Image 1 (cartoon, rainbow, N blue to C red):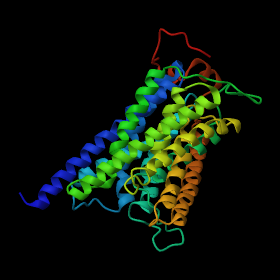
Image 2 (tube, one colour):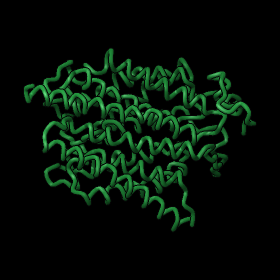
Image 3 (cartoon, rainbow, N blue to C red):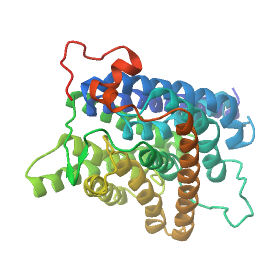
Image 4 (cartoon, rainbow, N blue to C red):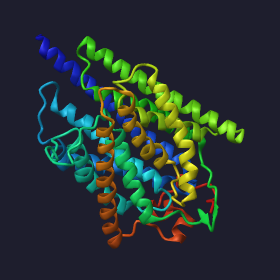
Length: 391
């Protein structure tokens, strides 16, 4: 066997393996969100997550991939493996969004938005950052380093979520005057399972983005990338737990896990560039940002049941800028410009599309449906039919 053929086979297998790890993030998001919402909305949340994976992936297959990368070509591995790896990413942008508008958003209009996200909005962001680069040579051309998508994936989903929350509004009864009604998670074991599935999936998310493992140099780079990814998650979990303990004398597992996820989002932009210590600082800052951002969004009455804005949007921005701060060869201005250009496009386009869809098919469920639970009206299948539904 020729050496080139051997490398082609190894890199194809590596990409497919990384893709499978990323797909584990689908049940990860589903379990995390199912555990954080009330029992009367669990079937709806699970249905949305399955539909996002199916709809976004097919839209990316038929339209989005070629728009993002310009062609179906690969000389270093099977093009089908390369596509599957990129396809595994696309649904994550809407997964970020779906959790933040859960318990009041209807499935059909969200599925329609998912088609547009998978075929145009996300592929355009990929195009100008990783792909064919339609903006090359223009004033808006960006030269941002973002290995696995702190901005390209997480912030894009976060900006879409912010637009959706503005249009959809808060859950019924969440804010009563200046008071914030606490709505506790329904199933903490599911939250833990979902968060840890996401954590494991991140190894494929970031490690697979290196692109090759078929040489000693690349194998070491993949291993370092995965190690740094894990380190940031550890630091995020620990700092979030410490802040919660010193502020409230409590160790809130949901906040600890969101701190870990915040650290993972933050390191995603450059885990291949850092030494073994820098991710500790990046992840710790990420975990702290989650703890402080969650109540801040509540103060301005932005209702985000799962903390997705704090985890994905805030830390997507921080992680991308951190590359420009900690890596000498990367320009901070280029990182900032990339964050700004994608922010304007992702938020602006998402808001317009969501606004138009909402004019024809309302995203927000009626108040009586929210009281009864989304499962009954949207799915006809309750996740826990023997339980008395709580208001």
